[in-house]
Image 1 (tube, rainbow, N blue to C red):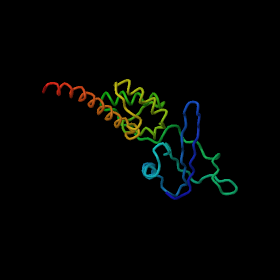
Image 2: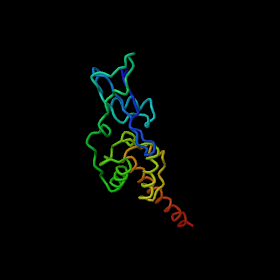
Image 3: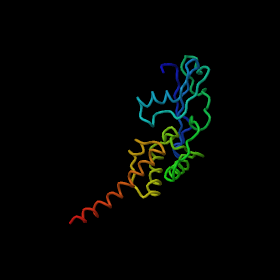
Image 4: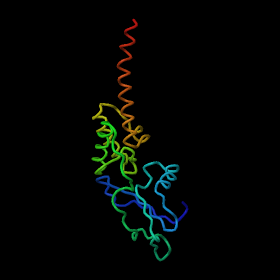
Length: 178
């Protein structure tokens, strides 16, 4: 991945928490978005990985040879995504719906990565508040950051519900033996 690249945070409206980061590379080196994301995941925290990538014939340069960031073309709206995987159960449907609403997306697949969809800590807090309310659990930010997909968060919710049920059953079982 050693090549000419331009990385830029664009379209920032800090009052509404809307920001996207873009990475553009010169043609001649194949740009495999998933391989690049994997490479970056090994070196950067998830929130620092660009949500979108673009390959150009050449990067625009200033007269002194530096990348002219103002001349970079805008990327199409939304992250690079394949066809979203549909929710497989009611928990995934509820969580995907919450994500779509808070992230401002039409549809969210169960394998879509929260950070690649433009998620960040403030959006994570909003999502967790809604998920915790919907399922009457207390999922933490760490759980979302460790499992940043709808499927991962649905599994976390399931684990938390089962742990609560087991906690309720344990005192009853301990009282039966006395």
